[in-house]
Image (cartoon, rainbow, N blue to C red):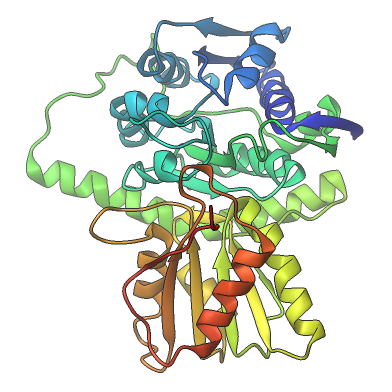
Length: 390
């Protein structure tokens, strides 16, 4: 490992490049490159990488960037790219295509508010707009969590029991542009961790095939069911990937969820990405005052970790969900998943709090106010919008 003070974008670019180079003795690597704030530095890093067998292709749009990844992966190469905000929205058609082709592409989503009106700061509406695409989705709290999760994503996506693309999300600017000391993976260890990428359905001269042809309803239903079965295998494959990561790198990365102080908690707050780091400090402060508060960080959004979440909530009576996203007419997107997961617990108060939309600050004071509100509640209401006072 190389310890380095660097931005999240630098860490992501380094890790993607190492993963691509690790496939040099197989069919190499490739990706499409199109810049968009706050993701641009990742693409700049990849464009400067010297691959033994690989190429990063500059293109005219995000749609084409994913098209390059599809073309590379369908010929058996390890494929990856990055995007944000309206770039992800423009890429959406090919995002779905990559998933339905069962291609193990890895995409870094640097979360940024969708426009118009134009806003370059963080919320999760861009990646979560793709929640129904057949992609694994991870949300990362820190620079180190980002690095580790990218490697896990390749390992899980390329596993023959899964063969689905994976999206790794980080907060725009809060992670992408700030600097932290990170253990960057050495090429030798990445080589040891990532097996050669094998795409069994890849195009071959000796076995011609057609992709994307017309199918009848019965075939499409069967295809979608196979994708669901692959998703159901992700937790076991991820667990194995974490074990192997610890063996190779000597450090154990976080799994689908991370539960803190929940074993005896009466009140549990749920968060993702950098909000979780702020929330952890608030929970510890309340614990020091004798309050039985706990927290859960959801790292894996697809497939949604229902059983893990149920176990982590335990005997708590109140659950609050912090959503840095908004589905108009519905509320927070993580909250809808949590509420569906906890539907068999009528004794629970499950309250949604929409925070930090458009890059608004999520401060300890704001989270303490939310904890006070949740603690005083006897029942849940419609999602509450919480803002820092202007």
